[in-house]
Length: 299
Image: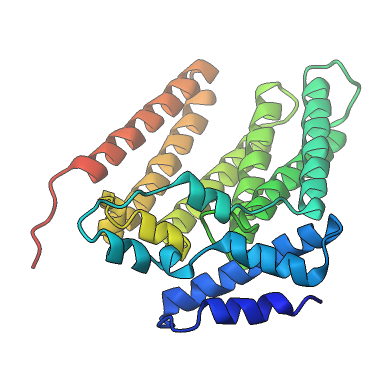
């Protein structure tokens, strides 16, 4: 392991007030420098030279923290989202992650494609085979979402495994529920298929709403500094509003899918689609009300 980069990084941060944001930035920079040094060494550059090159490319760490910019031009507006900052903090794809994403994508396309061909009668597949394919495809798309969210990005910290797994589960239930609904619409399943479809989709919406309403800020220190002058949106200013929107969304879709089930078995599928469109329209109106409605007076 090249230890020179750690020594040089400590020297670069010498004299910097190590606040929580500064410490967070230092660890983030350390990870990027280690990756850069490995890249330089792989191209044949000696370890000591690679470490010095990487630390030179980093520049002044005080500029990253905003100290140099504030001292040089205290009244000049900040330049958020600079291309230089993005280039400096760019996260390079991990080969293993890329391979997994490709495998998940191939599996979900193949599984859903075969299931669709079976539902249309183009392949001689029974209900058991259809459900297996739907389960395989739903699992693949859930893993695709969860694995992607748990990866480090340029602007965000990686999502914790537990929360990423929650998004994966919500995606799985939604995809499986929609698959059940498609089979029921094609006449391959009886009433129990519609019930399971509705339960899966509603559970997915509830879980997605909960995860979205309880999401915390994952922006990295340099990103928070870049957007410090940008006014926050309504949900960021008022977490209670975000939580209410999540609850309202869940209730709207529970009622919508209940109405779809009733209409499908009484007057037909077209009326069920009308109920879905109506539920979506109501959700958009609620969203507009939440974002742009009157604000409660501050106490």
